[in-house]
Picture (cartoon, rainbow, N blue to C red):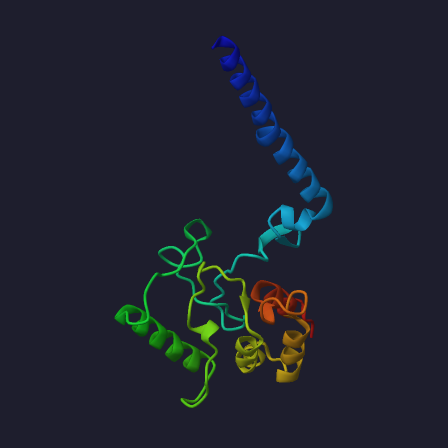
Length: 192
């Protein structure tokens, strides 16, 4: 019986070292060596200061910036510690009212008429509430407002959007998308 206990304890010790120390250290070392940007949170640095992650949506409220998806993460949205959707179903009056309010807001901010279709990603939160990307159509819908606010031509802003469209991964996975933080940084970098 004592021999079995010693064997069990030895196995526990060996597997604790392998799975609790060796494997995590090896994976961390490989990630740091092969993919340091991603392994460190895909942090975007501007003027020597970290300003956000390419993987987490942020709330842009100034009319001179592109807006991302609405967020249901946390009480005020965009709270990375409270990532998650609203869990409201399609028959929920609160969801219908929220979406109707978002549609009215997008139409008003971008001076759109009632017949103009609005991409769903401008009025519906993602499952995580922190999606950093919008569809190319959602970015293009905001070009007029951005150009007017910044005193740029619509063509300049359109070219910037087109330059920041990311294609499907491996040509088949996902949808084309635009990272809002990266696009807004590029917008700030435009010189006149």
